Length: 53
Image (cartoon, rainbow, N blue to C red; front, side, top):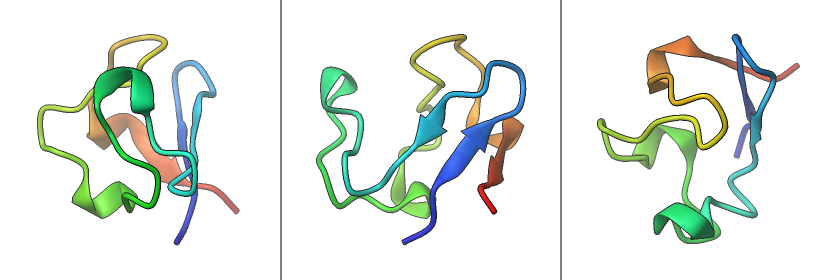
């Protein structure tokens, strides 16, 4: 599973870790995040993320 990086703030979503503070279990692929999920640091939506190289 690919990691994704938030363009505005640089937060990296790692699917192996998930986002447990916001109810996202480890092992959740970025593509499987709810449509209303936002960056936990700056609050932008999924469309502001790019796949990490």
